[in-house]
Amino acid sequence: MFSPVESRRLYRQVADQIRLMIASGELAVGQRLPAERDLAEQLSVSRPTVREALIVLEVEGLVNIRMGSGIYVVRQHAATVAGSEREPVEGPFELLQARAIIECAIAEEAAGCATTEGIALLDEALTRMSGGVNDASTVLAADRAFHTGIAAIVGNATLIRVTGEIFDMRMTPYFAKLASHFEGPGTWRSAVDEHRTIRDAIAAGDGAGAKAAMRAHLTLSQKRFSESFGEELSGEEQRGRSKLPAKGTTKT
Amino acid sequence: MFSPVESRRLYRQVADQIRLMIASGELAVGQRLPAERDLAEQLSVSRPTVREALIVLEVEGLVNIRMGSGIYVVRQHAATVAGSEREPVEGPFELLQARAIIECAIAEEAAGCATTEGIALLDEALTRMSGGVNDASTVLAADRAFHTGIAAIVGNATLIRVTGEIFDMRMTPYFAKLASHFEGPGTWRSAVDEHRTIRDAIAAGDGAGAKAAMRAHLTLSQKRFSESFGEELSGEEQRGRSKLPAKGTTKT
DNA sequence: ATGCCTAAATTGGTCAGGCCAGTTGACCAG
DNA sequence: CTGGTCAACTGGCCTGACCAATTTAGGCAT
Image 1 (cartoon, each protein chain N blue to C red):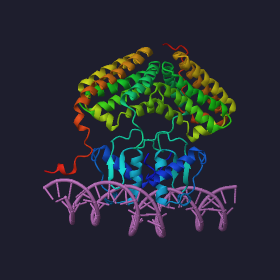
Image 2: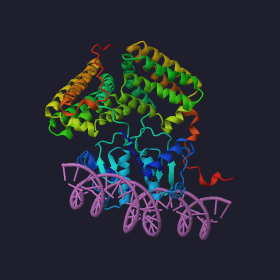
Image 3: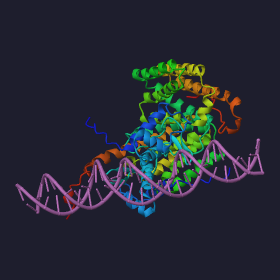
Image 4: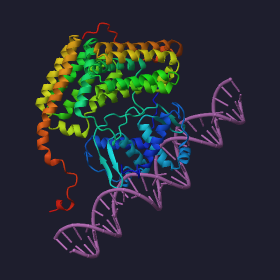
């Protein structure tokens, strides 16, 4: 490795160091951190740098900054590190497999405790989805509402949140770019049909059927996705190297 | 509750405003934002405030800050916003129910594709756990390693991440306070035994057994938890008191 | 003209010092 | 003991400056 320079931004280093102190238990949960001015002195950096590092930790949910009072440790683990230059970005297929495993179980569970209100929730999402197959954002929102709606039937806020988060993982630029090449009214209509099958199984209280329908839905999603890969790779050849557009040649 | 007043900090308001501009498409993906100095002037705030707001957006993964060059929009939607003032923390029982549904499915899946290396991973976590029943942080880390290890057997990074995140949800002060009153060498030893049962089922390729063992483990966790409820807090704060699925007849 | 190299302009990164506003706890009057 | 006041922290925000990385433009030799 050629990186002995370690030109990482200073406030990130400070954030890492404080994060480490929290993880190691040196700073217990609930404990108050030293004042910003003291931290700056101890770490031999300026107060703005300490402030920036603390804001990072606050956004990550590790600490709670209360003005006039102090900074308090909330938890030890950075649950979701949404750093921009981290995440090797799990592939789309990996994501769909994970969704298959998790959402099948949720659908099976939902079938066991379906209420009329819950089914109405799914129906509402279905109508919105079928009526908006021509508008990408509308149909995407309805798609999301359907999947989180199934979790809502179980009546568990944590499940709703996890379902939503795992759904939103497709909102990466890479995923979006691929999706834009195969998503269309046709594919969305197929998705609506599959959704309806799931809904019917849940409404009938058929756990195994709901599980199977959900698995079929996500499997077909994967198939639609992989089919677009073939033409994608053939037509995408020339677009890949737009990194250095030859400085002088862009001019007339 | 009275209105919390909530005088939001300025850099948060600035972050919200920029986030809105990105979400509305006013700032397209890939586009460069105005320089920090210009943003400060346009928004009538100081440059440090703009900087703090931009760091928030960077941690959220919305923008990419490249020093000497500028700030660029990475994506529109904040996939997982791990804000510190998140929704009112779902209750412990809700969390355990969600884990039961999700991790049972993962355990079942893992039993179908267990490798010797995967089992070794679980064994390693088990030895660490049984050897550290007297140290809370050690045993907790090993506990986490075991559960994410099951997801690792499936070989899906997304599953590993979700499992870890859902595990970390217990790291809230409220949860920790409760846990400190009933967690002890005895309860941890029981947990180790339950873990071992799960490990054996997975190693044997017994999907149904792994699922049942995982469900038993989380059910017993809930029981250990609920027993400590009576003496501590008046059950007022119990949200999501829903029991675990408790379907003894698992249809396959 | 062409291509490379250097210097200047631009932009983020960091620092110093200061003032304001909210929080907290000690202290004093009742 | 109760209630209110005040002073010492502590975070929030600002001004202004300098440094380092990057980009861009200009000059020089080919």
